[in-house]
Image (tube, rainbow, N blue to C red):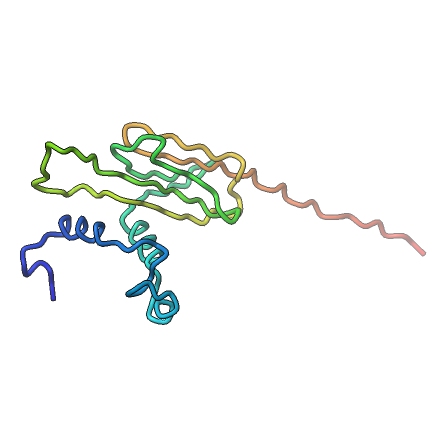
Length: 163
């Protein structure tokens, strides 16, 4: 049954779902981990998939680098993590928290809150030692410099001896 039939909008449903989330260690009903493995993906997998789908990014190839641009309004440097996993996977993650005030009541909640994450497999010519990240005016820019192209191999000349 569709929740919109009852007049429940997506932001409200997202807030309710966040309140009802089961901790990562508990998978199925009653915390039965063995039954959950057979029935489908874990809650951690689903949460990570949602976080990745809800985090749009622009990826640009420049002459000397790759540039990843992600909008992150209202986040400080402590809320954002940029890491490299498995030697070639760039991971941008973090969490946006709702400010809680006792004297305020939300009439509408439309801004996305919660965890976000994006993963990018870096190409072979990315220099893993030269990665920089700058967050300015709510826009995170991660630059990954390229390795210089390999020098073309010169043909080996073999001297011909007269016998």
